[in-house]
Structures are given as C-alpha cells and as structure tokens.
Length: 445
Image (tube, rainbow, N blue to C red):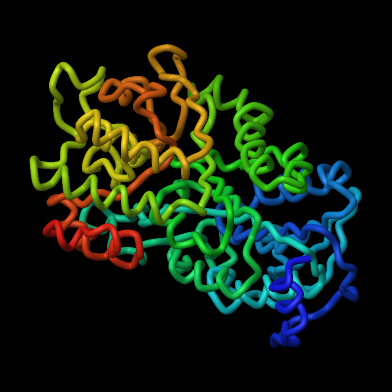
C-alpha cells in the first residue's frame, strides 16, 4: 500500500457534524478502491438522479468484490417529505443508509469536504475515485435568467452544482454553486483520486483539468452539454471498479456513448446522437501549459487570434473553429468554450502546430470523434445554441466541420474583446491558475 495513503488514514481526524445521524455503523473494512459518488441533485435533475441511483444499485451486482461504492445523495423529495441527504453504501445489489443529514447545501465546500471525509472513514481503501453528478458550466456559468447583460452577473463564474436549497424544483432563484477552484481545494485535502468523472455539462476543459491536476490522475468528462439522464450506470458501475485507472477512464467514455439506452429517445426526437466526451491524463499537463504559452506568443505577436471568421482556402474545410456553447442562446449569444486543438490548428504554422500537438496528445489521451452532422445526420452534442431548446441543430453546424484533424475533445477559454460586456469575463477567468500561468496578461488581456 502507498505510504502516503497509510499516513493519511492514520491521521484522519474524527468527524463531527451538527444535525446528522449515523443510520448504521461504518463497514470500516479496508478495500482496494472506494468509489465516491456525489449527487448534487437538489435541483430540476432530481428525477433522473433517482433513476441513476437505482441503476447504480443494479450495476453494483457486477462491481468487483474488492471495491466499495459510497454514494452521497441529495435531491428534491416530491412526496412533500423533508429533504434528507444520505450517504449510502451500495454493494451486491443492495443499498444501505450509512448516515443521514438534515437538509444542507451540497454546494458548500465545507459540506462537501465533510461528506467526502465521512465516506473515506467509512470505507478506507488503497485508492479512491470520484464521480461528480449534477449541473455544470465548466470554467464559467452561462445560464442567464433575464437577457444578455445578465449572462455572467446572475451567478458566480466557475461552477458545479446546483443546490436549490428551497427543495422546490420550480424555484432555482436561490441556487448555490461551488466554484471549481473551491472544489479543487476540497479535493486537495483528500487522497489523490485514480480518476474524477464529471457526469455534468461542459466540464472537460483545460482550465478545470489544470485546477485539479494534483487531485486525480485522470479526468473524464464532456466538452458540451450532456442529457439529464447521465451515464448508463447499470453498466458503468462495473467499469468504475476496473483495476487500471486509465482503462477505466476510457471505458467510461465508450460506455456512455454506446450503451446508453436513453439515446434512442433523443435520436428520434431531437437528432442527438451522443455527448462528446474525452479523457485527460494530468501527469503531463504542465508541459501542455508551457507549449500553449509558447504557441500563444507566436500567434498574438504575428497576427490576431482567429476563431469565428473566414479562413484562407488552404486552411481546412471550415469557416470557424469548433465551439461547444454560447452565451445566452442564438439571439444574443457569443461562442465560448472553443475546441483547444482546432484554435491552434487554425492559427499556428504546420511546424508550430506539430510541436504543440505533441504536448497536447500526451494530455488528451482519448477523444473519440462521434462523426460530423453532415455525414451522420445527427448533432453529436448539445451546444446551447438555440435558446428555446438548447440543442445544436444541423443548421448550427454549417459554420465548422468536425473531423479527426479538427476535433480535440477538450475546450479552452480564449479572451475576446466582446467578453468585456459580460461582467468582464476576461479578467474573471483569472480565478484559474491556467489563465494566470498561460500568460494572457502578458498578451494584453
């Protein structure tokens, strides 16, 4: 066993929290891996959270015997009962309540830390992995409530969540979110995770991954919006216990995109095929930071950074770079969360790009191309491009071509002059170490 992990377990403090109750004594049986699932579902996703929890119970029948599945579950109880967040041990097709809490804000960093420490104390292990389930906005929040000017003013940026606190699916006015830098501070106080899987929208981007680089060996997530039904946990639960963390991470992506029964409904009704997901290996991400910093200096000192205008005919078959979301919908929206690889491909010389891509490929180790809409007839990810239904359509895809060359499977924030009208998003992104270290201030932003 890893000496650091032994030390951590020996010094783990006794945990106390007000208004909580242990329903059953902790198992306290040492195991190979403890998988910790954090359901932040006291919001409009509550019904899908219940369905996924039941899928995990079923899937646990196939989970390796030397793994424990610990689930923190906070959701809206539509039966007018008090909301009772609960930690469950799920094993061999059975769900056992280990601890209950009075209603609490699951987006609060102190609450999150206590919950994780409690799950670790109940199920000490050689290694750990985490699933974050809920809403996500990647490195920034874009769910405006009253128009363009409010897009980045209604809520804090850099968020995962959201806890409505009102216990009412129709009242999101009091929703709380946890900033990703704060989430990283929580995870840094825990043993390093084998992998973190974000079953939430827009979380697979370089800013989030860099913030969590010391917290996990691998990050799994989607660059875009993901349908509310989440992963197919009847099959994914088994994969969460695979011995090799890299294999498990890649198989989570494969399982999400191929074995999800819910896709049939979305294919038929919305022409949505599946979500665009990828795997990031954090070990080499500092080298990618340095390569990106060099590349940005090359680009910005020689020409303006191009992302959404016409390109020379010898570039490639596209009129703009791939992006995964828009601010506030198609009427007022501006593209954000650009594909990191595609921007570099558009803006670097062949020699410069090859050098940068070498560093990129060591970090983004798996990013299956789900196919261009003009070839498949389906939109392969959500995109927040149409305010009415938040779904990318065939028409929206005419601005770029999705190919193995262009698609990188991870987004990055690139400052633009127009963003100063959104609560000066360019400077707000300095909450992230990546944005501070990559050199945006040196380049005039």
